[in-house]
Image (cartoon, rainbow, N blue to C red; front, side, top):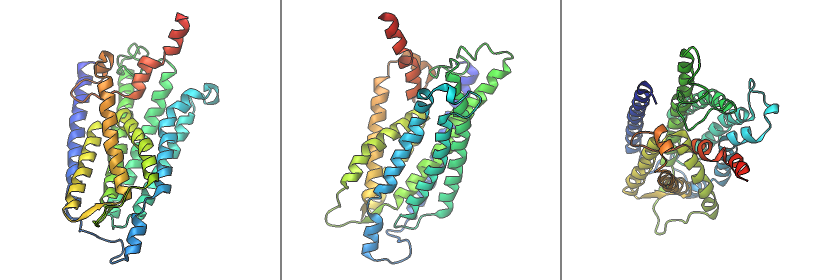
Length: 331
């Protein structure tokens, strides 16, 4: 990685840390102002609280399913389906998956907000949804071109300037254009996509608390069945999106909110426990992923610095993409 590119990456990381800190500070000031228990429409009956606090299996199931199919399955569909069906100068199947994700995800998030038993700041929620859609749309364009380049020999485990199909381009200003595209895809798009996404989850989590009883209600079996797939998807989101710092800040915010509400005599309901346990399990999966690839020198070169979180698709292009052909040659 050239010195200029390295400086840009370091500046971006510093900017991301500052932005995450500001978001965390804003969220902390918000939860500090939360009353001990604020119903949606003033005083409501206990039956209504229990109804709103029950586990929203339908929304969480659809949310997890569409995340796996439309986000994780997006690049897989582009690789599996024949290239002749989707010419390189036209949108791919992954692009259509991404378009559907940009519509369905904010819709489900808004439905989750509607079912919250507490009053949530609507202006902040709507603003986050708008930024989320804009960021994911920016990522749609950059990611579309980026994955199309893979069919031309682009290697994801290398930086833009080190890629064989890029480094010999003439004039050299074309390389700057590809670096700009990479910046929109991996940095700006991810920031505008994931920061409001996790902020929305934090705002929703702030409404997932109920008065403490003698015995805390057990988490439903349906929630336990969804924790595994949900955590595994969040692992993919954190590693492929390169948002480990943002995820750590979000997890700390959830822990701080649990401790803050516990002092007021409130405990997490089934939805809050589902989200909280999913984040804790995701943290363990990310730690295992980092430990497994800790001594990979090639990936270390692409991800320098203290925060080392390799991308799964970079690992794929480095170790697994040419594995079938290597086995065929050896046999």
